[in-house]
Image 1 (tube, rainbow, N blue to C red):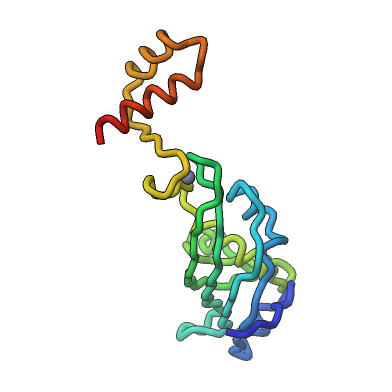
Image 2 (cartoon, protein in one colour):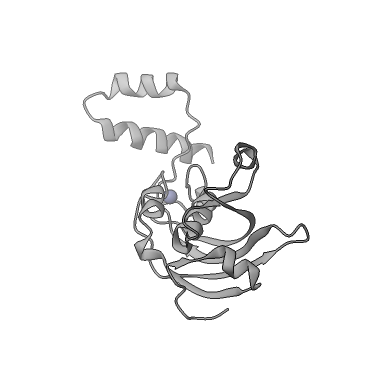
Length: 181
Ligand SMILES: [Zn+2]
């Protein structure tokens, strides 16, 4: 893998005609949708290899390999959690003005407008697919070692007796949990 920064826009159909390989890095810092999905900005670079060609069927396609170190916020303790990503994908390239309604229903079709493909947006989409629906540290690594396995009755009972001090509820439940183990 190379350390050169990938171009922002490419013509994927020309690249496919020439069977070109793009090998380089992209800056994660600029990926705002990824930042929103992770609950915090991404930092650093991701490594990307994209192979453009025409497959056995002659149809243009891109196969990609993306490696990154992400750190979404844990939804339990709100601290970052390490999430190494190493993902591969393959997509058929379809020109926006030529696509048929059928092509859009297929999986892994990338519709490209004006013969220009935004590489950062493509890679950002792939990285977002690698995020868990809910990011959570493994319990033993989480700053909040609080298991969500209390019944609502337990919580209500704790509330009733300690409603003037909401933090006491947490302390009480935590105490019960520690006592169990
Ligand atoms: Zn956590």
